[in-house]
Length: 228
Image (cartoon, rainbow, N blue to C red):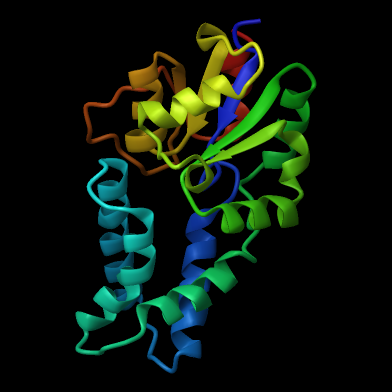
């Protein structure tokens, strides 16, 4: 067997975070009495992505992202709001989101027969635990490694050191990382010497110098890799 241990990202790999994010954002905005628009959402997405990229580079903290992103967003539209209150409302709806990626249950059911499956994710423990439990996907995994609990984020060596030290008989050469993020999942694997599989959703283009070991466009393509 080429790989016996599979490390899965959550957002946009197992669960459709994009769909959950948009629905949660819209509900939060309307609940706060603001007017929702696609332009507002796209502005938020771009700003939020840049803030999380700064977290990955170690330039800021998760708390800074969570508790300032909405106040910064609305400031751009000339409004002063309580960023913490907005975050708490948004987080409540986000925690309920269990939209799954296509074929995820079928793929994980088959993989679990002969592989050890683990979750590796950057995010908030309460949110990721809630979504994994409510979706029922938690049953496929032996453990979940969440950046907030670890105190380090992908792609840092500290994150993967923790993962390695907490998986019995961890063998780097027999492990594969599967995730959608080039800058956290794939870069992290490359830095740590673990093979990587980039889950590249159709229409996504790699504009970086980060090169995955493999690339798939649907989860069920993973079988062609692990069985080769």
